[in-house]
Length: 58
Image 1: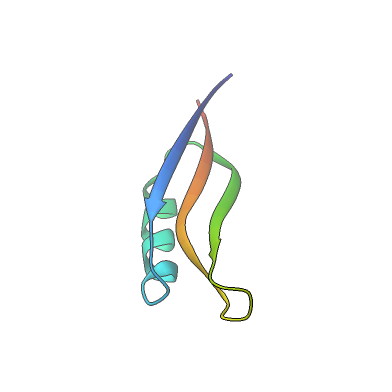
Image 2: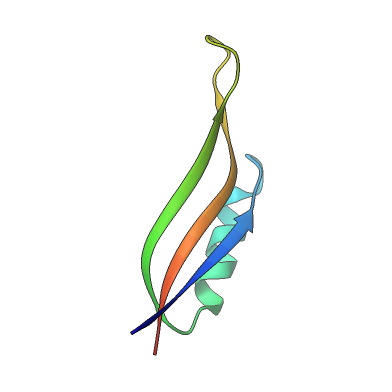
Protein backbone atom coordinates (compact mmCIF):
# COMPACT_ATOMS: atom_id res chain seq x y z
CA UNK A 1 0.00 0.00 0.00
CA UNK A 2 1.15 3.50 -0.76
CA UNK A 3 0.17 6.57 1.20
CA UNK A 4 0.42 10.21 0.28
CA UNK A 5 0.35 13.14 2.72
CA UNK A 6 -1.05 16.46 1.50
CA UNK A 7 -0.63 19.81 3.26
CA UNK A 8 -3.51 22.26 2.90
CA UNK A 9 -2.91 25.87 4.02
CA UNK A 10 -6.09 27.29 5.57
CA UNK A 11 -7.34 30.21 7.60
CA UNK A 12 -10.36 30.42 9.87
CA UNK A 13 -12.57 32.10 7.26
CA UNK A 14 -11.94 29.65 4.37
CA UNK A 15 -11.18 26.36 6.12
CA UNK A 16 -14.42 24.52 5.38
CA UNK A 17 -14.60 25.45 1.70
CA UNK A 18 -10.94 24.61 1.02
CA UNK A 19 -11.16 21.25 2.78
CA UNK A 20 -14.38 20.30 1.01
CA UNK A 21 -12.98 21.17 -2.43
CA UNK A 22 -9.75 19.31 -1.75
CA UNK A 23 -11.46 16.14 -0.47
CA UNK A 24 -13.80 16.04 -3.47
CA UNK A 25 -10.80 16.07 -5.85
CA UNK A 26 -8.99 13.14 -4.20
CA UNK A 27 -9.04 9.81 -6.00
CA UNK A 28 -7.82 7.60 -3.13
CA UNK A 29 -9.26 6.84 0.28
CA UNK A 30 -8.86 9.38 3.09
CA UNK A 31 -7.19 7.73 6.09
CA UNK A 32 -6.80 10.71 8.41
CA UNK A 33 -7.20 14.48 8.70
CA UNK A 34 -4.75 16.14 11.10
CA UNK A 35 -4.83 19.80 12.09
CA UNK A 36 -1.83 21.88 13.17
CA UNK A 37 -3.02 24.21 15.92
CA UNK A 38 -0.86 27.15 17.02
CA UNK A 39 -1.48 28.53 20.47
CA UNK A 40 -1.26 32.20 21.17
CA UNK A 41 -0.29 33.55 24.55
CA UNK A 42 -1.73 31.68 27.52
CA UNK A 43 -5.28 33.08 27.44
CA UNK A 44 -5.69 34.40 23.91
CA UNK A 45 -6.72 31.20 22.14
CA UNK A 46 -5.43 29.25 19.16
CA UNK A 47 -5.68 29.03 15.38
CA UNK A 48 -5.32 26.35 12.73
CA UNK A 49 -2.39 27.03 10.39
CA UNK A 50 -2.67 24.05 8.07
CA UNK A 51 -4.31 20.66 7.70
CA UNK A 52 -2.55 17.40 6.82
CA UNK A 53 -4.59 14.85 4.86
CA UNK A 54 -3.36 11.24 4.63
CA UNK A 55 -4.54 9.48 1.48
CA UNK A 56 -4.26 5.78 0.71
CA UNK A 57 -3.47 5.48 -3.00
CA UNK A 58 -4.96 2.81 -5.21
